[in-house]
Image 1 (cartoon, one colour):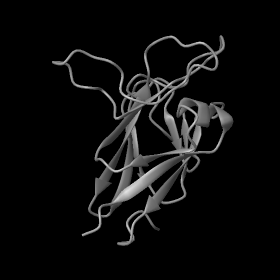
Image 2: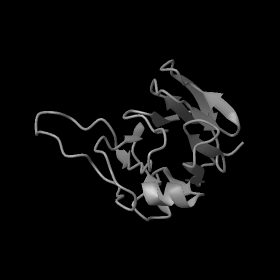
Image 3: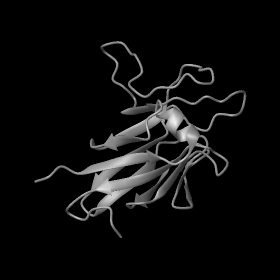
Length: 149
């Protein structure tokens, strides 16, 4: 069986910067957890990867987005959302983020409430409020048809 592979594709310059300059990242592990790198950054200093932790402490996220806020409010929480694979498709679960996540125009979570939404191929994912510049597209490379409406 061919493994399920999806991608988060940056749709804005800020999203690409949060991905360390890459246009997209593969999503092939389930659940795939996304959050903000906790170190304070200056504009232009961005990368993706695992935050350094002690050997005994597991990583909180599979993907760490680096947010350069330039004095503006933060949009990405330390443990923001995760993408899961279920028998009938994909789901995005807000992990109790402060600002929430927007999936295909629908607000999910925020105010540390959490929540979930079905995630389909081509859905736009906004990390944070509707004013957030961190906008991605969820893309599925899946011969079995998962993620397609």
